[in-house]
Image 1 (cartoon, one colour):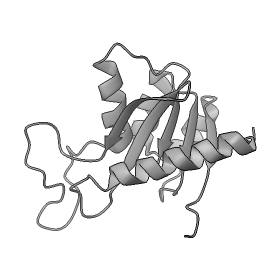
Image 2: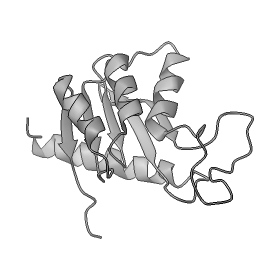
Image 3: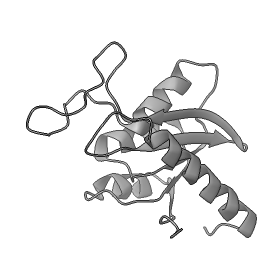
Length: 144
């Protein structure tokens, strides 16, 4: 499905906001931001980082990401789960396409569309979402 001009304008705006959220991440290797939108209302946001109560250092001494770092979309979905909102029929706007593990969360949460601006090296998460019937829209960053 292609986006109308108006939908494209909103999609780019939401991706820009997700990019701003990404800047809040303490992770050095990658900073990823996510927004969950339902009916043009932002119902959640997230960025990659350590769990609540942990030191905000995402990488180990070798520079590898620690195993317990939460991805941006997982943080956003967990925020919705802790609220009175629901992801059913929502759109996820994210600055990096989802990994395998997050793709399962996206599908199970009821998100029906994922709009992303950068592609993760492993595309198996996208392949899973496509197979699950989640609409995928790739909108690369615009050159400013």
